[in-house]
Length: 397
Image (cartoon, rainbow, N blue to C red):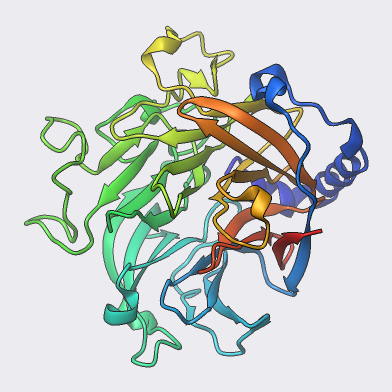
């Protein structure tokens, strides 16, 4: 994230004041031309219904697809809590605060359950720790025999990725319909990608990675899928699925089509949503959204890079939060639409597209909340994770 947690921790009142101000002006909202103004339509009447409160800095909400109806709340400091039937269990699912370094953009950032979790009890975490310098850890854990808790001692570290700076750690991990684990890695931090990681395919930073957690190689605790685009290229990290990313905080797969949508946080001018395809270069740090990155004066030919599905200026939000394609039943008018939001402005939008062309876009809500993530339950209904400590469900108004 673009220092979004740091902004809240150090300057929460200005951020909240901005969100309230934007909420008050919802009737005057207009899309910029680059955000497909001509496709703006009247949004369906929806609202947010509070499900739970008094959480501590929640950053993700995930289901295990095990038929239990449970939702798992990830708290940045290192706790995972269980939400079921509208209440949070007093018993933690997992607590790894003893090994997580949290604060700013670091901490326990991602959770993904193995597609066969109901049989093998395996799940995976993305967290940061100083050992001795800051690293991203991708680790496997096992749930107990009754699936109610998990043993912190069951950890098997799959990847250790050094982080040169404390920001832009990415954080999302998710299994695709191919049962491979996808990992979002930021460019390593600081500003304007000083190490050039976004365009450097020899590093794991600035990329979306794809690994096989059901296989191993001679020197890795995971396998490299045979159809990874750079698997056989010299001096290229074989884990890379796509690259040219700045800070892919949240991404998701459409549960019907398998399409991969990714929100990539911008530098100073543009926030973007990418429709990610195998082997594509999404431009950072040469491109910021659909424009050449201001102030860097790098050779810039936009035709060399895959443009985002949509981007928007900082006047509409400061930290894009990738969401989900709605596949629930409670809000029929939203079925098939992709929903996404912004931490800084608290806005939630929807869009539809045909190929690369956005055919419809609308502002759904001015929430006034610090949206750190979206969540999806087993029925395809969507939730909003408020970093101030609440989970809210999206419902018809």
